[in-house]
Length: 205
Image (cartoon, rainbow, N blue to C red):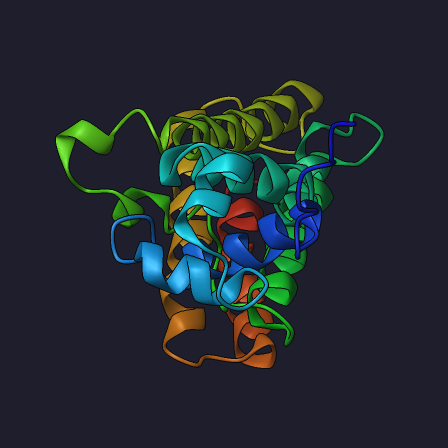
């Protein structure tokens, strides 16, 4: 009678969660296989690691998918047509700042820091999901500004791309501020200031 294989000593779903935190904290290239093995169930063997995840690259992709389906959703309000465009942008910034500074996970944003996660050309394809996510957020900001112009809350001569880039640059900068220990209260105050760029472009009533 055939015997069953040795059961895994770790929960694969939980392992992806723990690996995501490691990649989030250190980036793809700086996270070693030894770190991953130590963090996934404590002392998982190399054969067990490859049996569960195939490769470090495949595990990173799974972690990106997990992050994009969870923490990255803080900016989904940019696509909520029921929100006033200014409110949608401010909400996205506030939610992102809150997420990036809260305890329980690494500071900053895995998407925002993704450009630094794998700098070697041969690893460019690995961070493509994060690159696409930044592009989607950028498109969402632009769509909000364009909607503001169309609705008359911004003047017709407003440069939609330039104003959207102001908010996008600020959003990306939050990741570095969070890594440097800047807290939510300071970020919230700065968000209030950056939103004045919208108010300056609003028509005089």
